[in-house]
Image (cartoon, rainbow, N blue to C red; front, side):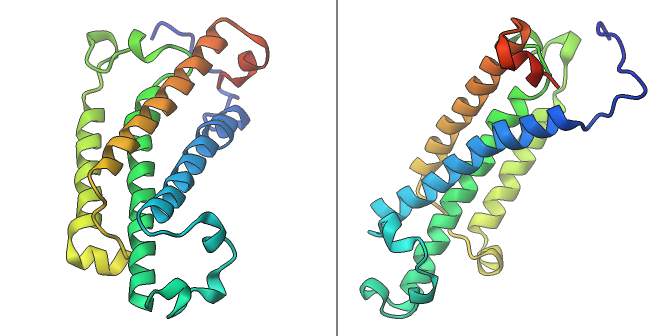
Length: 187
């Protein structure tokens, strides 16, 4: 309420918002989640990226000494790691960092009276419950081809969420200080 209202001609979804969501946050999240897919495949399944890229036609029974079930299981595990990483970055990085356009998260804490939004925590908990259903329930595992990842991947996802949070906080700092290109990124 302290800010002047938007112009009635200004759209809520505009080029700057799309640039922020897709070119800034989106590219980071997508890149990190893909890296985690390849990290899992290399360190836990023994497939190097060169074994995976453009290998779809080879991904059949006997590829690299694996049965079709073993190959499918490896992909399901890696996809689940990708999914967990992406969910954690969305829930604990993106959703907390992008609550405001310019102000730091620490200026508008969700539990402070002026900027209270406790529903964000309810939404995060509900999202985590949904994530665990998709990963752990056998019926969901069959539908979505997921597996319950090793516990370290949850912590790695949380660590990357902190990276997303930090990067957007840095962007907002640059916007507030009107530093070069970043002053144009304020949506």
